[in-house]
Image (cartoon, rainbow, N blue to C red; front, side, top):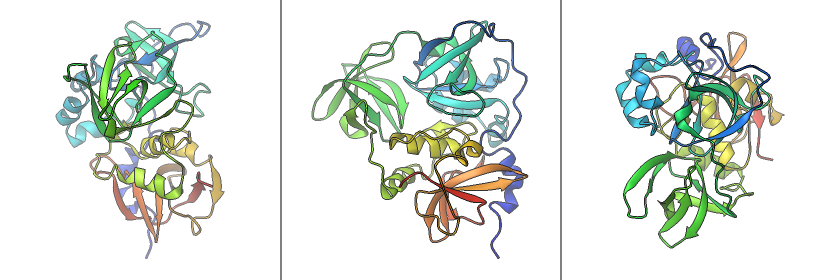
Length: 325
């Protein structure tokens, strides 16, 4: 008999997708009347926290500049990862734009501009150390290189590794060669990236074409990537961070959290869901999980802490939404 997904994992969903757990108390921010300013992420992946007091000592590698994402992930046990629920809001990628709405000491209260949410009209809110940002406006170029591998290294002109960046990272293109692309960092350093690890397109165009098959193909690249509460990168994803990031490289900007995503796109029936449609699951009266429909009763999703992105039975979704016409 079909079961609601995942009936045996209700506890896991409590530490599943963003928005399911109330955040910790937020430290005071700057006066609400202070004019907002813009900064850009200058670390590989910036983790946005519920408050400046939310990080634990084990989270130090994620707070540094440069951020040591892999070191942070290796150090955490499954219990440590579960404890990120209520601490982490979301993540922002290298070079992404943040709107500053307040500050407390050396921390900035920001909204992630490219991550829509009902919580703030300017983007997904969170806190991060100011040292992980730059106020220098990015280089404006005709073409942009979008990272399409899970992660890749940016190197200095001598070929030395400098920073490992994530899938979905957009880099201003300065020069193209057969094997390497020369790009500008958020602080205007000249770096190179392997040509095969990126797609170069005009800045106004999406990196990848929008078709059902191409969206599913992109999503399958994440198979085996570990679930990470608030994760939105090739290093780790939560369920809605995964779907939002995949659709973004195809030129479709959808909300950050599953409950908001469930109100976006075009409604379709669960029985009529096609590959690349999103399937949503109601747990305890609210949408608590999302994944990609694959057809034939299967779905591709990031299930919960302790699991990896995988293909499985879709169970009994509550509703489905379509983003590819």
